[in-house]
Amino acid sequence: MLGVAMGAVLDGVEAHVVRVEVDVSRGLPQFSIVGLPDSAVSESKLRIRSAVRNAGFEMPNQRITVNLSPASVKKRGAGLDLAIAIGILRASGQLPPATAPIGFCAEVGLSGALLTVPGMINLALALRRAGIHRVVVASESREHCIPVPGVDWFAYASLQELATDLLADGLGSPLAFAGSPFRDGERTASLDDVHGLTAAKRALTIAAIGRHHTLLVGPPGSGKTMLAERLVTLLPRLSDSAALEVFAIHQAAGLPTRPSHVPPVRMPHHTVTAAGLVGGGTPLAPGEVTLAHHGLLILDELLEFRRHALETLREPLVHGRVRLVRSGHSRDLPAAFQLLATLNPCPCGQRGFADCRCTDTEVKRYWSRVSGPLLDRVDLVVSVAPVDARTPADTFVAPTPEQVAEMREELTRRQPARSRTRSGATDFQADAKAYLEQLGQRLHLSLRAQDSVSRVAQSVSVLEGESTVRSAHVEEALMLHGNLGRWL
Ligand SMILES: [Zn+2]
Image (cartoon, rainbow, N blue to C red; front, side, top):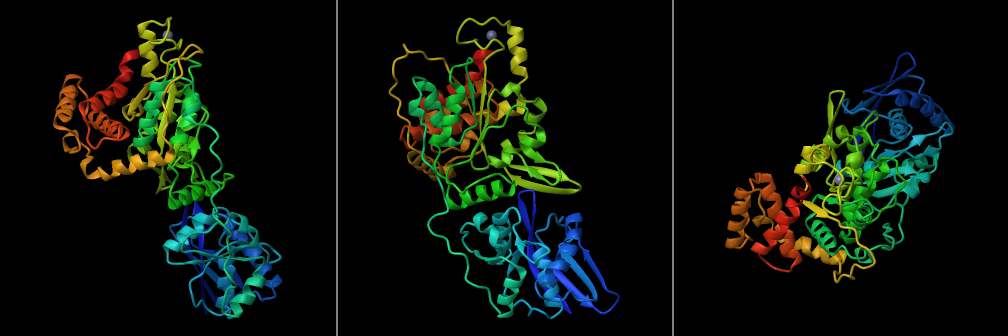
């Protein structure tokens, strides 16, 4: 007799639905699991055997074959224990066959107690994609569960308790949640707390509007790190679904996390390895670029980072995803982050701001250490000059995240006009377009650089509350883009 139960496993930050088929047939007593089980799945045989007995059922003294499909998915961890146990009880006629799809996501203990498994939200999202909207979890998983549209959670303390309900042909009532699961916290810092630096604050605002990758260049102590950390205060709140996606990623990565609409900010230490930055290892762990999905990746003191690690940023910067190939399988992880890096202008840190002690050759060599692919993708280079008490108070007032959200919507409304090439941008006034083309030729800007300037000009135009791009906007965008030249 065949028994079927559905479960899900985590692979990196992705989850895959697994169909558990159990066949109980006459023959020498034997218990085998096929379908690429790792050692944890094999160990689950011991746990399941005890759990079934301790829940008051019989472990069939027959030939038990468990097939986990699809076979191509590597099953790690103990998360399929419960689905396998239910499959055995169904195959041996001790539980009725499934009448409606249910996903079972728990480890079982020897006593029959249900235990929590990592990445609960991702497991539920995978099951939902497969049309399974009821998810059974361990009672102790409650704290990891949040409302997910289209998912009903059912929590049980033990296999016995669950089986009692399944015998009565139903599940109890789904978990009820009071209030919103999101804990957004209070904003504690703002760009307005920063004294002076008007031009840099304006540039950061433009970066926030267009999600432009940005490099902050200034001498040590000029406040570039403080500015970088405050960019998040300008960013619009994430939508519920984006916030859920971020929460699921962080939870699956085993980070202490709470669901929040505030975009994630990741600021890895400069000793981070390539695998730490883009992900890797066995089992597959997401990197900083994936943890910064929908948010900010801040690389403070860019040149302190290993060049090899920085080179790996090319792919996520271009595609917003990172592809990891491991034992013949490739996995795409989301990595749509905004990059914000800080850098001294030269080895002594003063070039362009005060007396620089470096030779031109030293400065050239210094800048050549910045990864080319990374510099290619930077849209804004912002100069951060030190301020002191004599700097007059500035009049810059940072927009609220809500205002930035509206400006982003305006950019999206212009989307049909936004194009990969400068000539396709129809929200440009004729003279602005001509100006950009003329400058592009004169300064030998690559197509990508022209596209970048064109996108930044659109953000400037939106910040100014205008409906088209004028020459002045192109000029400001070009100045921000071309700032790089001033240190070389
Ligand atoms: Zn110098």
